[in-house]
Length: 138
Image (cartoon, rainbow, N blue to C red; front, side, top):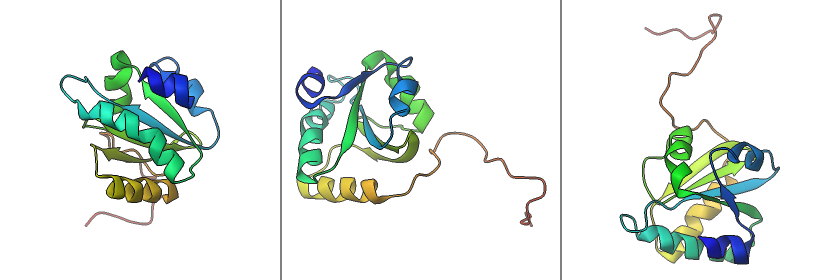
């Protein structure tokens, strides 16, 4: 994880620094690596992430979520699996890519994620609908 920060300009994210990171314009990818003993593929994702960015000539910031902040960040974005990459654009949720993938598949998944529009994070909750909405339950 430190290699991502030292060699690839990633930012270490704590619960209290996430808001400042999200204020940056553009695309960002948060890495939730999980416990390396329980989820050793999290280290693989950390190695592959800058290679994916380079191979796709993509311009996205990388945020490495600190171990003690991973549960809070995962809850915020509805992530339930480690490792995960949470893709954001202009501070808004786009999608989550969970697990480690074969190189070709990963390239396709990341490329597709970077092209997706922002959306609602799959967190627990009920969407709020206006009382004046034109659709009704039957």
